[in-house]
Length: 74
Image (tube, rainbow, N blue to C red; front, side, top):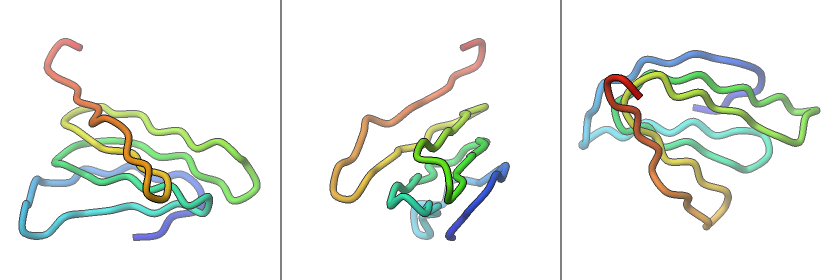
């Protein structure tokens, strides 16, 4: 899925059907079963994600960042 703007997602974990959100700046979010918000506007250099539950991985090109996880109470 490609996105420009802001969107909120609630995604079930399905290992056989991964879910990826691509942004205009070339960054991507791999969804690992989660609830999260993305702000990714074409005219703004920075992209923001807010993780509300579960886990996501943010990447830029071939660079992959650590997986962000949110557990109950954190």
